[in-house]
Length: 116
Length: 114
Image (tube, rainbow over all chains, first blue to last red; front, side, top):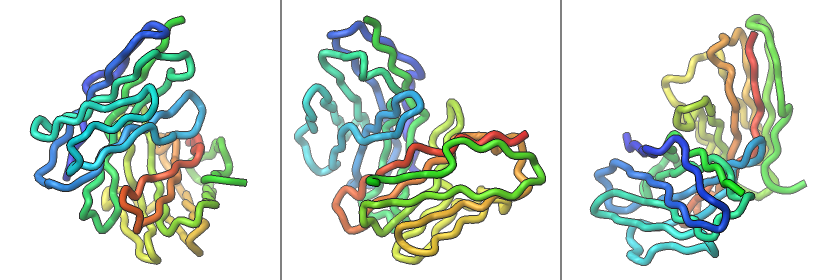
């Protein structure tokens, strides 16, 4: 089975600064999708950004961008101009393009604190 | 109401109780999921219902029993649970034919087993 590793259980960033959350994954597949989800305290998990493995261009959504390194199996999330509302648990997730069970594999999460 | 809703939001039960968690999605999706979220562990996929087909994680104990009467509703029936089953239970839905098939999550049910 695929595994997703988030090696940073906790991170902190000063408001308005930039922070990068790391994610690595293990797979033998060539076609897959990668996601970053955000789970604010006591709130719903929402999708932040997504990336298709066969697209070389890194995905960007406003202040959120990824650094996708397919050969290294790395998918880091960069948050620019951090805001207090960015404080949350962030989960990296993997989905095979061929998964008949639509299974997502999640990492253990990174808790991000934003310091005013 | 929009998105994915879950009831109840909080549940405390004894080990001999029987209870059910409910999930409803208002997104027109055709796949629904149950996850267990425990601290410092990856989200654990418990069950998937997709196009009337059920896929289950073989490591999930039989004291958890899912039911999916239609594409919009999903239940998780609980009986004779153990304290280690205390966790946040998340429901999600997705549209299987979409390219990303990204999942949309509900707010979760915080379950405490005494």
